[in-house]
Length: 304
Image 1 (cartoon, rainbow, N blue to C red):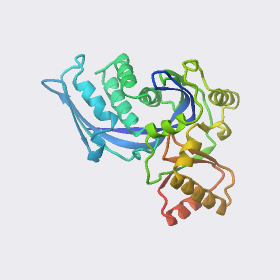
Image 2 (cartoon, rainbow, N blue to C red):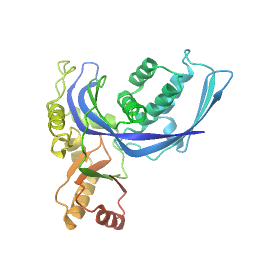
Image 3 (cartoon, helix red, strand yellow):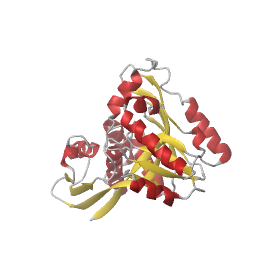
Image 4 (cartoon, rainbow, N blue to C red):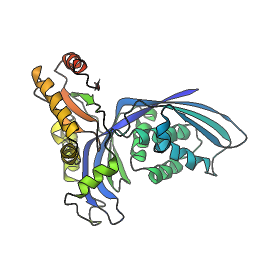
């Protein structure tokens, strides 16, 4: 049995430039992987036909997880050999948390099939783009991380179908404090909230990189150091304004940080939420934060 770690993604920059005529949105974004993951266990053997059997620890996910949709697509694919693939998915990435957990599950399984030479790059790309806009960027991040042993950033824009790996060496001067609220924010609802803002309804931005995305890249090329002043998330204001529980939790954590003398940090919503992050300079001691968050019974993780 093989074990895959299905890593979550975060957007360091996420701009929504316009709404398209096909009801999709033109976005401009910078992706990277983080050390939060689901576990996928795979038993793989020759068989009389191509067949995938999928088991998950949370039965509610069977309706919505993209991995199930991918399995259905693959079971109908005629270009694959005769194998039985048994998959067990153990969820750790919060569902509805804006960390791309379902997309990461699909991307990691496609990557597994690609490495095993069961599907080629073109099939992986086509299935990724068919099933979800985040899958292919995560698949590319896996390629660099596991085949080329590089942690990179990915630039993604248009209808999330134009993708450029940013193979730039950089220093990360922060650790990330992840906060996992007990509520979900559905991506569809977050886009509906954004649509109430003035979004241009045309195709002019379909091949554009957003200004904030461009500034992030130019600064990274110039300094080779991540600078949180260039992080941005278009969803932040509308989500916090419409989910007062999230805003209250944000203020609660900010109060804790100030109590222990941490005044330098960057708050950032992850995707469309509900997970949010604080990027904190590494000169501060994270152990004090842990103690206070435990006492307040706040669900969190710190990544260095």
